[in-house]
Every structure is written in structure tokens, then in C-alpha cells.
Length: 334
Image: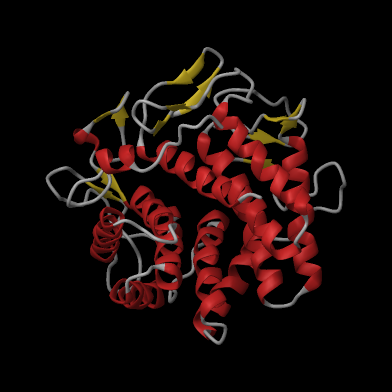
């Protein structure tokens, strides 16, 4: 990457004292679209990962945590969409918003530098862990939060049970070497499925499960690498034995790969996984199918997608968080 780094300035621009706005036109917030739990939870993961956060990031963590606890009902389920006038427009559920909220809460409970944030996040995590989702990706996201808790509280039976159930929800990969994946299609945040299996295998000392997760991730990286650069599955997805489109590629796919490869590097000590993290970093720098940088150095915002005509120049929350998340891993590379 160039000397410029994205930092948190656009994330601060997208945030207010309620939460994190979902959409922007270029770098300008579109308030009419309001907030969503998915993005706020991602935001809590990212700001909590900072090892020595500035005061403004601690304030963001407080804001995002307050949003998530407000979104959670007594059963542990979560609302997802809050309008700009602070009204929920949906009913609490246990889909992706539940899973991502659990990921954010688990990360904050394990890593946040502020004790009261850790304690409140753990309380909300425990309540949410009473639920199980029928959706594999929601379970994978929740399982990643459980893995965070287990790394600092190894005797947490609540987190261990959720992580085990998450790995089971992902399923068993097919034995076909041309498609060693537990589902006949790839959709979004695919690497999270492999990452939660890797984490479950590592934290339970289950070598077979760990190997399965690493094999899944190896295949996913290989089929999304073209001429030495990333070319990720587009937003339309890809079904086995069908033609694969090249566009529109989403930054969340690249960030999910970076997360999973960083976890694999930590678990195995294999430098090859760090090289795969570098490919994710390079994708944002311009080593992609369009040869275009995927963020705006003037604003610090991440572009919303890679189209056949180049970047979608809107800089919403999901893409900006994907950018920041990937660059957090970049700072840790040797």
C-alpha cells in the first residue's frame, strides 16, 4: 500500500450518537436509510480490535454497544433496522443480524480495553447465546464471537456450545475434490464458514475438524485467485457447475478472506496464510480485475463494489468497515 492509510475518519463521519449509518452517496451520509445492526456489529468488531484505541474509538465502541443492547430483546434476538427517527422497522429475529451482533459482542467481551464494556458485552452475548439460528451463515458469525470469548475464557460452556453448534451448522464438505464445500453454491462472506470451522477445530483440539476448515479455506482462496490476484465471487454468487460471473465484487468478500486467513496463520504458524492476507490488502490497493484502487484516500472511505466499469464510488458502512478490517491485518504482517 502507499504511505496513505484509511484510518477511521470515514467511519467517524458515518457515525452519530445513535449508531452507524448504513449508506452514503460518495462520502456523504444518506440519513434516510437509517442504521442497521449488521453494520453496527461489524463496527464494534473493528474498533475493539484496535490494541491501543484513541478516546474517539472508545466512544464509538460505547455507542455501538449501546445500539446492540437496545436492538436485543429479552429472548436474545435482535432487531436489524432502525430509522433515522429512531424507530425499529422490523421485528427481532435470529438471522444474520443476530449472528453479527453476537460476533461483535463476543469480540468486545474478549478484547475491549474498557472493563465495563467487556462486562456489558458479555452479559448481552450470554443472553443471545440462548438462541440458535437455522441459517448457517448467521451461526458462523455467532460462532466467531463465541471463539473470541473462548480465547480469553476457556472454560465458558456457553461459548463452547455455541461454537460447536456453529461448526455443525456449516456442515461437512463434499468429498468431491473439485468442490470441497458443504453447500452446492457460494454466496456472501463465504470465508466466514471456513473460519468458524478452523476456530472450532483449534479451540476443541479436534485435528480432523481443523484440517477440514483449512482445506475449505485453501480451496476458497485458490478458486478466487486469478493470475496471482484476488477475483472474488460476485454478489450474485456462484452455483456449482454453472458459469461464474466476474462482477459485481464486494469488499466484504475480501475482508472475510483476510479474517479467515489471519486466523489460519495464527493457528498454524504457516507463512503461506500471511501471503493470502496480503492478496486481500492488495485487492484494495488495485490488484484486482479492474486494476483500480478500492478506497478514497481523501475521505478514508471504502468503495461499495467493483463493477465491470470500475469502482462504485459510494462509500457506505459495510465497504468502509471491510477496508479498515483488512488494513488492520496488514499492520500485523511481518
